[in-house]
Image (cartoon, rainbow, N blue to C red; front, side, top):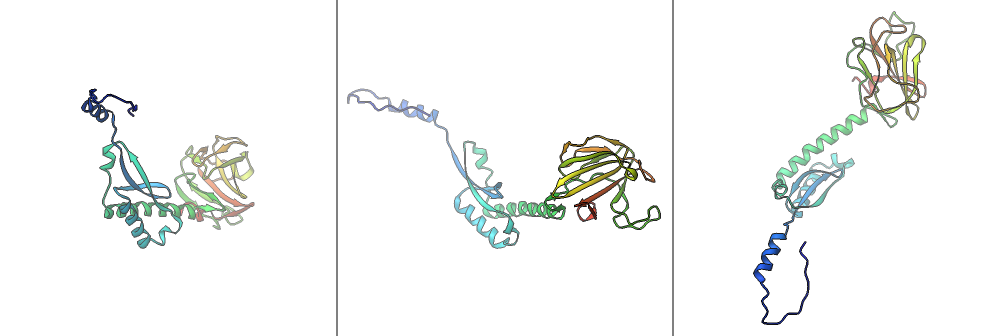
Length: 246
């Protein structure tokens, strides 16, 4: 910014106004203002004026009242020195369309998350991709009880990923499960990963959804390479397909 000094000068003294004005112009940096339409405090699109922003928001609230019940829509005043940013602003009709597209994406993600959440635990990742060979509750000749988990066939050595954030509470051999990893996710929720050929974690480790914790195998009571996957709530098995592999 230019510095200014107040001075008393004689009337006949040259002040070089043109030179001063030119220097101010050279040093001045133009600043532009625009408005962002926000969904849950994230910018979705930009308009030029506050009036356009308010019009966009009001029309969205009229047309999308149900979808906006759990999503906050607002505006943010933005100052920029980059003229190209200003050129990215759009008319109200386009702003509404772009905001609707983003709103749909957010609603779909929220719905997906709700359907895959149990008592605050979000099952974000499928442990393996493969063919489901036995579902929860199945009655099969290979066992004397209904199936308490689900089996997903995959090639030996296929990485097994943890379904949700948590802490490894068991990693080792456990009877018919063979090599087994148990992860606790809080609120009494656990996941079991059985018949592993290899274990890549140890008891006490903290894991994040998507981390590789083992490899598919056929250890324990198993008729082929697959992952036996369970979800337990307070020790009782529940159907994993309510949350994954739908």
